[in-house]
Length: 202
Image (tube, rainbow, N blue to C red; front, side):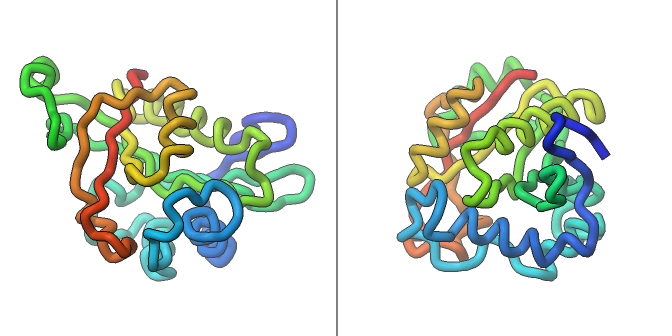
């Protein structure tokens, strides 16, 4: 348990949190409140119950990088309300090659310990209170301390300009690279929508 600020505790998610996280994640990604630019292009829940429980327990079978990478939750004090979540994980591999990737830049960093962010959400009722920033800063610190990560990479749908701008405000940079959203095509009405790549040096 981490007392990140006086009114907020950040801790690993536990199995009893699953129902609250299901609602939180799906309403943050698809709900009619909050930052929902691009909502018309999303047709399915962001995550299913079995997938979420596997991630909480560290038993996800389909992705070794996410296995044993905890989902962390932000719990408001003194209410005890789970208001947000984030899942940082890492992978030592080549930098991602997007459609506009610079080959010389990739050669300069042949093997980079990269951190990644997934399932980053704040319930619309608690947005604009600094919870997202606190969760993200916690995740970046966790990456550096636990895995010696040198760069954090985030993938954001190109149809979400408000989200892209928020990350840029916090020091992430867009370099023009894009990748197909193969993993998320089941969520999208338009399967041709791509992901923009943002990075931040740690």
